[in-house]
Length: 235
Image (cartoon, rainbow, N blue to C red; front, top):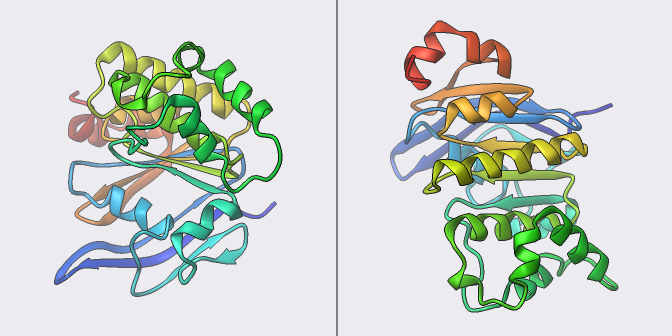
C-alpha cells in the first residue's frame, strides 16, 4: 500500500528567512506521525506547506500519489485532507451545529448522520449544539475544531498544536480523543510542542531543529532517547 503522504525536500522561506530546510518525511495509512521541536523549529510551517497555505520552492508534496504543490489549499478538503489549525479558528458567531455543517460543505446529501457521529465522539458538543461557538471553553472549541474537520471524512487529519493553551486535564482529554481516532484507523499528522504527549500517542516521530529534521524514529524510541529526553521532555 502506498503512502498517504510523501513529502520530499521542501524548502520554505519567509522573505529572506529560510524556515523549512530540505524536509522529507512520510505518513503511512492508519499511522499517527508527529512533528516535534521547540517553538520556531519549523513544525507549523511544514504542516502549512502540506496544507497548501505556504509554498515550497523545491521538492514535492504527494498526497495519495498526487502532487499537491500547485493545487490551491481550498481544493484539498475535497481530496480528503483536513487541517485543524493552530488557534482552532472556529466560526465564533455561529452555533456549534452550524460550525459542523460548514465542516461538511464538500459532502453532498444529508449530513445528519455525520453530525451525530461527531456528537457520539464529543458528547459535550451535543449538549451545546445550539450554543454560539465563541462562548465555548478553550477545550470545547478544540473539540469543535476537530469535529468540524472530521465532518469531511478526511483520509488525512492534520492537527496543529491541539493542546496549546489548555489545562492539563483537557490536554489529557484531547490526546484520549487522538488515541480513539487512531484506533478507528484515522491517519493523523500531528504537530505538537507537548513532546511527551505527542510521542506517547504516535507510531513515529520526526524532531525538527531550526527548520531541519535532525532525528526520527518510533514514538517509543524517541521517548527513550536520552538526547530527546534532555532536550524536549525535561528529563
